[in-house]
Image 1 (spheres, helix red, strand yellow):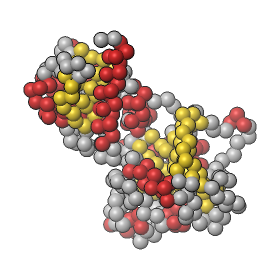
Image 2 (cartoon, one colour):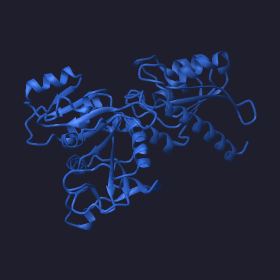
Image 3 (cartoon, rainbow, N blue to C red):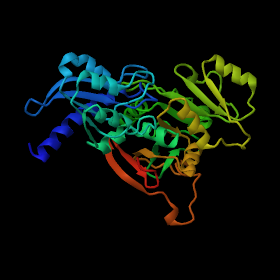
Image 4 (tube, rainbow, N blue to C red):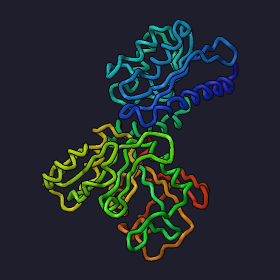
Length: 374
């Protein structure tokens, strides 16, 4: 078998593992999304014996699920997995022990696990037991699917995506605050799919007071993310729609109205007080650190302009997802109204850009050039 053919076969089964890993979206955090395929490579081109994926946090890992499904047929096979198998005891026993016990002869992993408790030790344990290992197959794709997990493990914060709908002149709302609807129905459906792909969605209290949004996933399949509201003075009304269903987390100042705290808590919300007096704004790094501790790997921010501006200024935006509608709003509220740059060299450039037409709108996705590499 030539090296090119062997690479194509490995890529094929790794993509299959990645497709299974995607099924855990919205259910596995703070764990990574992992899929696994067990292949009998004694057959020309390989034959899939079994598969599995991490279904939810606390459930068996992908490798264990695949091995259970394969039974005795796993012996002598190759196991494909998009992330290095774990070698430590967490919510479940080490996957490396199960792989060795099943008699797997080779493990092909997409990437090393950035978790300091693993980070190569899983591969080391397998090799010590005589299991052949290959690491780094479709690594870029494997890192992308777990970009939130990587941020959590390496930087102690979630992967942050800013999502917004704007006019062609860059406005998010009219001067009176009205913003429904700038984008078309197709863009709004896509926005709900984006929500379902994140662990939490964050807005400022201004958005709550102006739009009274529900912030749930409605027009697409998937689970609703945790709702995060930055509300330094706890101005959110007790009858706000966000309190009707799903988990809510409020970030507020160090000395909020305790009656309001009690009322929100009775509604099922979690209120997190800023530890120190920092003025009218809560530092973004403190919020992101707290969310990471709560198990949020991927966070989508939907507004408003002040909150988005604070994130941009803090240098913590990893991705932009912007829907541009064929409308001109004039003297409205701009996407970047709170930003100011003295020189063109100081402005934010993008990389890895995608531009697509969706209905009558243009959907732009990009990563800030200054965002740390995965």
